[in-house]
Amino acid sequence: MPSKNATPRFPTLLAPFDLRRTPVLRTDVLVVGCGIAGACAALHAANAGAEVLLLAKDAVDVTNTSWAQGGIAVVKLPEDSIASHVADTLKVGAGIADPGITRTVVQAANEAVAWLERLGARFDRVGNGPTAALQLSREGGHSHARVVHANGDATGREIQRALAAALANHPRITLRPGVFVRDLIVTDGRCIGAVAMQDGADLAVEAGAVVVACGGTGQIYRETTNPTGASGDGQALCFRAGARMADCEFVQFHPTTLYIAGASRFLISEVVRGAGAVLRDRTGERVMRDVHPMADLAPRDVVSRAILDRMVATNDTHVYLDLAAVQGDPHALFPSIARICSTFDLDLAKDWIPVRPGAHYFVGGAATDHDGRTSVPGLYAVGEAAASGLHGANRLASNSLLEGAVVGRSAGVAAAAEAGALRPGLPRQGQGPQLADDPPRLLQDDLLYSLKSMMWRQVGLRRAAAGLGDARDRIGFWHHYLVKARLGTRAACELANMLTVAALVAEASLAREESRGTHFRDDHPARDDGRFCRRIFLERLGDGAIRTAPGPLHAPTDAAIS
Image (tube, rainbow, N blue to C red; front, side, top):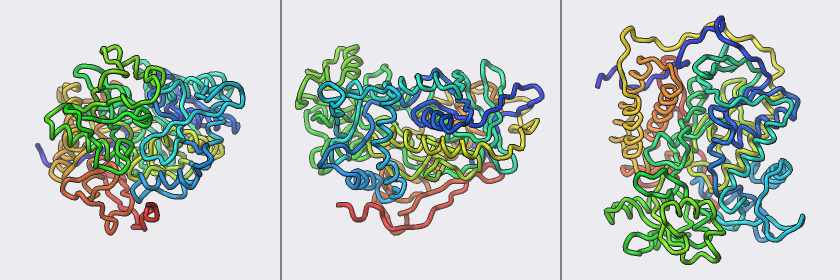
């Protein structure tokens, strides 16, 4: 492998553009992505008076939000409190979650849920009538039942339905599905628009502010709960545009993904374990016994690694969920899960369900303030594309939909206010990467499979310096030749984005020489607050290389939590 190609270098644009031959749309606020974070940003920006253009690369209901089963964490019970929810979040965040943004988001939870209900979202309630209380479930890492859900285990689908209707009916929002945003346009240090692809042709957008909300990245791994479009577009867009990135070493793996060889992976919600299900190996031994005080409701990183270790110890491809202790009919409690399992002749009430971990949530992204502002003026990031500091080294279950609603709202309002700033106008042309006269012939599907397999083996649940260094070099090599081969299709651009995000994960993982939260180093298995109680930032240098910029050391934010 040529050493000159090993270090990953990323161009500012994936492809050149020429606005003399490209249609240009103009809007106050451009939102990229229509899950809960993007939809909330768009709706609140429009409510603040801005004209909003929302671009989605697939149909409006094809989002990571739609796949979310658990729900939204919100304090409702008299024995629960804001302080308790904050403490749980900081504890799971393993010492580096930001207390300020945590309190801001948790305090806004009740209003966020009420606002979604006013849009038409129908959450499960106990009893009937207008005074019926919201039904609450408990998930891993939570000290109380505080998870609001819909249709048992289809919360995300219900939220997406309500948001999609609101988007379609808002007079100041133009929604365009089937549009893939390829590059952001930055002029004089300010983000002023984007170049997109629709039906094979380029389309440019000039905007007073841009909100990136398309952050699902699970497809960089062989095993994932994410839909096929989760290719890390948002993180890659922000990084190439010059935004400072943070927390990219922290990739959360969900412990329980339905595992049947040849079948599409399907998330088995943590609510199932919250209702009493337990993990067993093929001999019947409980996986989480003596592993953690919270047993099967331990934080997801703990459960995921325990499952992986048990798979290795038993020489098996999976473990099992046993629902025998669940009170009530599991078919009624978890209808979506029951339906999927039934297609494989599995009965939740009788059978053990085969499961294994899968990449689920990308904690890192563009570093932002409480309103979603990145380090690039005019550019905002929300949801999974952003690293607000809420999650620290690990995400507390059902805090992500909450963050999307709360920070999406503040980002939309802030973007609408900024959109009135002087616009310099889009440049007429933009230079992409240098292309080879005789481009290499690549089998992109083979490259994609190689990337996913390598990330699973070397940059997954367990990591070490040798594997991480090898992964970084291979990613650089692959990215170099993919760009030379010309990025003329959406699939090629998505692959370039996946390689970009994979490089960010490998680089940050090499820099963090300890184990914390979702990041576990076999060669540094202990948490090291003396050196690494800090965030790790990544920046793009002028030549396209990645620079590591560790943040300041601070006292662990979970220090006072028992």
